[in-house]
Amino acid sequence: MKAVFLDKDGTLIEDVPYNIDPDKIRLCAGALEAVQMLAAADYQIFIITNQSGIARGYFPESALINVEKHLRQLLATAGVSLASFYYCPHHPQGVITEFAIDCDCRKPNPGLLKKAAKEHSIKLDRSWMIGDILNDIEAGNIAGCRTILIDNGNETEWQLSRSRLPNFIVNNLREAAAVIMASDRSPPQKKHAYS
Image 1 (cartoon, rainbow, N blue to C red):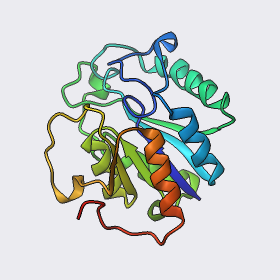
Image 2 (spheres, helix red, strand yellow):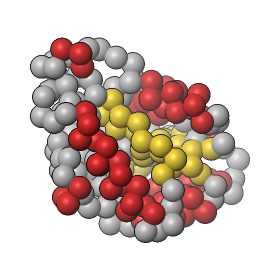
Image 3 (tube, rainbow, N blue to C red):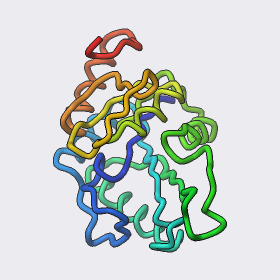
């Protein structure tokens, strides 16, 4: 199986920090069309998200149940099934003891992608990670995926290293889907678009 792993905030939905209110969740422009394209090309769609608001005590872990449910409903309106929703509740400086840890699932670590691959028999070298910050890209690269950065202004630090270089940089999820469609027609490459 091949997959597209999507960061949630700023990639699939508009970035509203620490939001758990389904009424405030809005898909990014072109996101529905993008996931339709990807699903039609037999990619399974996964969400991979850091949710440090749990560790910070901003909201309970159970609040993500309604967030996931709402996202599934939004995608279903486009006829797209969300394969799974993976989140990291941890942060080393958290105030909730059980979540105040260093972990392998908080991006830029690849733990959630590897867990998804194991649980869903995903071929990571045939899959993609799309995100709006370089931590997303690093997680995807370490896991062995091809990577696309959505340059929408959310990455502010630009701390570059080899593991943080995306294969492609685009403006939105619709453009990312188009890149994946074009890449499907040609042999997989690990070269960066600007090298």
